[in-house]
Image (cartoon, rainbow, N blue to C red; front, side):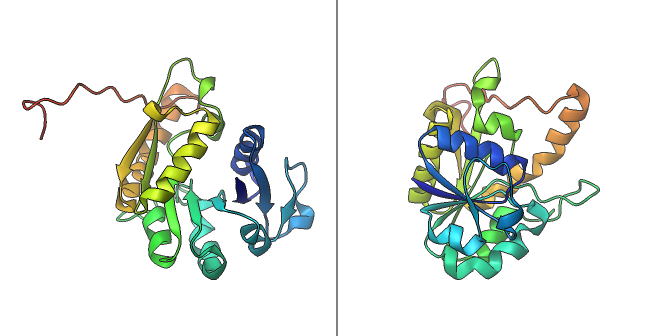
Length: 211
């Protein structure tokens, strides 16, 4: 699959390396492609990267991604856009406390199929879940079932078994996983490492325990 990763920072590089290892054709999108070095794939401008892709991953700085992606709406039309960001300010407070970046992106880009995922864990774990000693979970939010199916396939290629993937529902559920960032930050401080993740243990549904 042809994948454009917008953003050349640590998360973009990490994810790009794993997607290339999984056999995908990756290109990076950058505002200054000539200054992007030590990337695992070529870098071009944002619009050119999108034009050469089937799926776009936003690995942009989350606090600026809405402003960066909105003008690219025509280029992004009908594509799957994977949003992996947590929009927080320098004080690590949520920028959208009553909403989420995923929801804002879908509202601003109505012709784009936004899927939220990979924002509840460290980038290295997202790109390689076997770094942890036991299976954990990853979440998906989005309005388009076909788009989520595409993203689920990419997650499988990264090492996330179908049983580890939890589809939370519509893009409005992105609010839940983005607000989890506050707990993630607290856990990182308590554990002194970002190398952890959630594992959801659930009992079989019965009439007694079903809401």
